[in-house]
Each structure stands twice: as structure tokens, then as C-alpha cells.
Length: 292
Image (tube, rainbow, N blue to C red; front, side, top):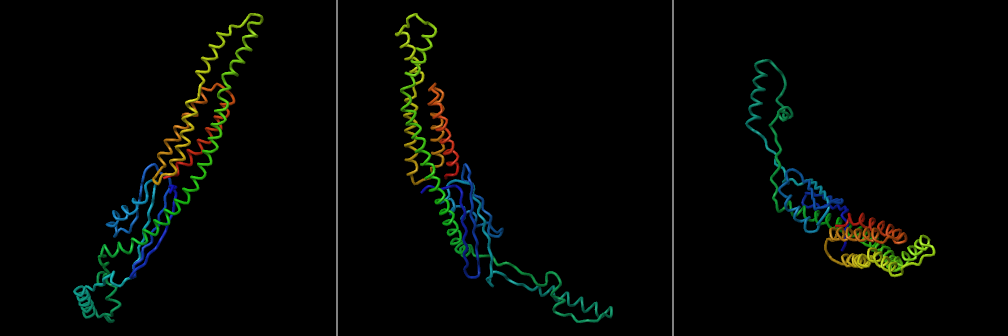
């Protein structure tokens, strides 16, 4: 399945009072660049997350955002510093007796003093946390890949349609190419007649000149290679693997053949067709920049 490098996917999973939300999005990139943002306390899971992603993501700049919420009672531990509370109470009694102060050492007052009551986060069990995160990660990844595949199929159809247009241009060039030497012969003969007027024209010399021109302007090999490249392009789309780099190289070769045809043909009609052909190749080149 052809995949675009642009995609988005999101999923959540909640279990036993713990909730993970995973968001994945990507854009074009030459390589496989994955950036993962986890809660700081769970950075130990980054390697597992990365390995899971790299099984299905081969290319593109991918950003992964993972958020965590916990409502489980056993995830926190509340501690009371009894010794510190006792010391505060003793000092409050001392102040009351020695300075004639009034009031009670109420619970609210003592609880406001720092470090009397502290909340500690219980160290999570890695397997438990991972087993809660994994369904959200897999779900987001499935949605992300599905979007990439949908866009990839649209790109495939568009590129193959453009390949058909290019094929039509190549066929027009193929039909025109044999006529170029004859047109050159007629133009050359006409110029010679104008210059030489009544003087006879050396047909042998004329034939030699036309033959040399035809040899220099021959584009049969370029047409054959360009036709082969179009066929290869279609074949590549049938492969079940990342094809973006292969397509990029192939389109460069197509463009090179088109440039050679334009420089060798010395024919205005072929030049005009080649300009249109190169325009379609450039459109394909732009499209494949977004294919994995």
C-alpha cells in the first residue's frame, strides 16, 4: 500500500483509573525523524514507544505527543511528619504561655505549616503503565497509517494519470522524430537553391550533410529509455514497500532524458512537446516528495 508522509492519528485508553492520550502527526522529510514527548516521569518508556512506531513508520518527520492522567488511589501516598507536627505544637504552646497569647492549636493551623503533610507519587509498575499506554499508542498509530494510506492512494492515482499524459507526449515525439531529418533536408535544399541559383546542387554532398544532421539529432535511445522509465514507474507502484526514494531517482532520470531530447532534436515541434512533457515530470516530482 502506497503511503503519504503526511498523516494524523489520535487515540485514548483508560484502565484502572489511569488514562493515556496519544497524538501522532507527520510531514515530509528526507529521513525517518521521530520526536516523542512523554511525561517527564515516564521517559523510561521512550525506547519502547520508538520501537513500536518504527515498525510501521519508515520515513517522514513524525511528532508524537503522549499525555497521562491518573485517578487511581494507589498512585499517591500521603505522609504526615509526626515529629515536625509535634515540634510545631510545642512551640505554639510555648509562645502562648510566655507571651500571653490566646487561641487554640487547631488542626487547620498546624496543617498549614510546610512539610507537615506531603504527597508522594508512588513509583508506577512499568509493565502496568506500558500495558495501559500500548492500546492508545496502537490505536493512534492505526489511525495515522490509515490516513497516510488514503492520501497515498490519491497520490498514486494522480501520478499514474500524469504518467499517461507523459506517455502521450513521448508517442507524439516518436511520430515526429523520423520527419525531422526530411524537414532539415528540405530547408537546406531551399537555402542552397537560393544561394546557388542556376548552379547544380551536389546531391551526394547534400545527402552526407543530412545524414550527419540526422545522426546528431537522433533521439531514438532517449525515447526508448523514457518509455522504459514510465513502465518502471508503474511497476514501482505495485511494490509493497516504501517507494519514495526510488520514485525520486526515477523521475530525475526521466527529466534527464527529456532535457537531452530538447537539446538534440533541433526541431521546434519536438521542443514544444518536450516543454509540456517536462512540465508534467515536474508535477510528478513535486507529488512524490510526499510519498514514504
